[in-house]
Length: 460
Image 1: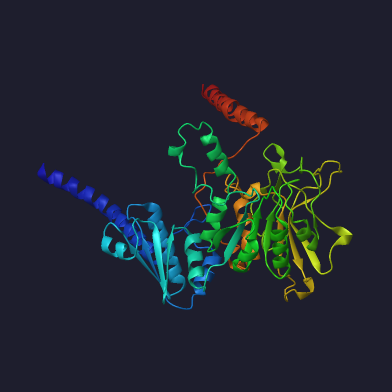
Image 2 (image 1 turned 120 degrees about the vertical axis):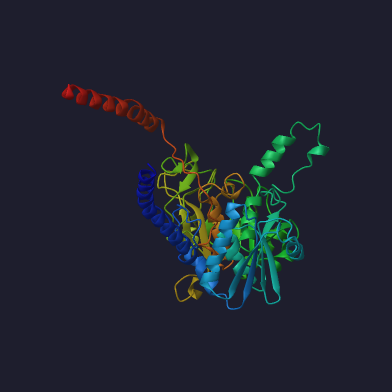
């Protein structure tokens, strides 16, 4: 009996030993591959891989940069961010990366001025920089910034009923308005129609931002790399309008986001760059967002480095733009970047194609060797696409940040955009939903039932 039991145990051991050996081999191979071959990124947005532009930025670092990533070991996204930083380190030996958990090394975190996990400290020679966030965009643009002498400033004009720059951060104190029934509505409008998300995106890309109040534009312009007028609904004063005009003609860069029929007082500036804005709001029955013809949508952009690879964008309540035609000033080139379909309508006009965003340049004969002229003025027929309500939808935010990067001459930033986890969803029309219902709920089960009955009948 004992001999028989021992024989059976030996047979079982002989059966399982190869399986256990194979499992151990696969485990060892997996551990070796994880440490030496990296990881295979199968996500749709390539969340765990560096873009070629980020690798190029890392390779251009010409002096030692030490990156200390303060992260929580229990947080998967922060651990993934450390692995992302390791890819920069592999691209350039001058970049040294360390991971520190503030909970395990609180003294080192306090010395670096870090209170919470999710921050990185970059040091290069005498320069030191702290960033909050662990995305590729954060890291890449931090490397760009630490290699620059100073950040360029984007100035937003204020005082002409533009979109509020401080929305989402400087809301009313609710404790002081207990009896105000309209506070929630006012705060919601303040949030949706503000520019805080656009401002935060620019700061992530390495730009400094500031608001410039009416009457002080002339004094602020020398410190501005780009001036943004985000939907003025009351006219600029003569002094500010003339100061902006003179500064732009002298080589400054301005981005005008204009609303239909809203008085802005910048007609002389538009005339200098050969841009006309016909009255009325556009309606595009052939290409619009969802079921609103008043929100023209653009997916087929003009071939230009600013719009390369952009997803669809849309402009809620937009004005049409067009070149001034025969009255176009000498030496001025106007390039439409985003256009409607050829069925777009303006009040009192036949269907035609209109521009939604144009790039205007002066002195085109002074273009570079590649034929591209230095940009001077970008005009969009809408400002709502860049506000908090629509900034994160489709390609609206990327379109705005690309416009600023182009005007500021930061072409390296054009292809580096924040990448996020996406919940893929499909929006179906009523007809498509009915087709899916009848196919999946009725036709397929009925077909399976009929096949089963047929097989049963034949076997019977």
